[in-house]
Image (tube, rainbow, N blue to C red):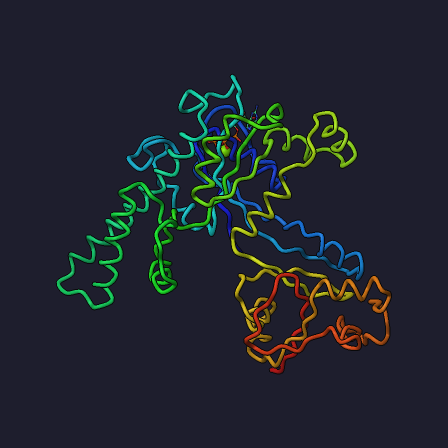
Length: 376
Ligand SMILES: Nc1nc2c(ncn2[C@@H]2O[C@H](COP(=O)(O)OP(=O)(O)OP(=O)(O)O)[C@@H](O)[C@H]2O)c(=O)[nH]1
Ligand SMILES: [Mg+2]
């Protein structure tokens, strides 16, 4: 299961955002929680295609794609030097596959700001710097271990050389994701779980008053654009409250506050994209399910996601693109209960020539509907 860790300064609204995303009801308090054990929850990824397939197949069971969100303790300035909670809990960050970095935009006299004033750009930089220092520490440890050895293997020498370059890069307060790494080097480094190598999405946590353009957001947004990082604006407190309401009530409130769209769905979508994930579907009367793959995964990976037997005994994949399937369906050429379909999702698609037979090397595309032929 892929994980998205929620990071940010103390009291920036991390648990609030976690609740918006997961509806898990984690504790939200106006004083720093000092809690290091993170809140965790699984979240189904909203996907209109999945919903449509469930509508069509009326399966006994419907299983959407899921991502785990992990709500972490606040990271203080100088945490890497032991301030605040220190950075011991950063091990929870290192197990995340991507980061949601929450930045405080809301004013709230009841909630002290750890830096006293509201300055989103500064706040973002403080946390980024702490992550950079943590990675530096990891590199220093490894380098001193390597240099303590009497003799280094050629691989170890190459590693030392690379780590020294990364060290210089980090010393300039630049994250590792801005260092040009080859695929080979990324593999060598994967065991370190560097924090600044993780994809990051910035969450601008605003008050419901901050609906139009927000001048305070400009400096941070300009920097994020330069760095190629995406951001999502969200009305933390408000959306957390709205999540408790019935949809009709929710719509009414949004109209009253002239909010057109809530950030929740976009946030989950962006997180999914950030993790480099795509979905494929299996569908039938028993179950409609969205499965998760990395973009670039092939048909055998898809089979393996379902069951290792399917990967082992893989013969071929029968694939139809979601759009082709829906086109057939809306033209009335396909009905799920159709006896011609013989229990198979895709037989009708074959008759119409939109079903493809694909081999092991086939690169799965987002939205493929797949049936695996296998033999074990
Ligand atoms: N006005 C306003 N208050 C907010 C907003 N988001 C969070 N708060 C308040 O800020 C306080 C802290 O929110 P949390 O979500 O607990 O913040 P946190 O980052 O998880 O805090 P720690 O885990 O202690 O670091 C709570 O009292 C929230 O109600 C917001 O968008 N607007
Ligand atoms: Mg919290």
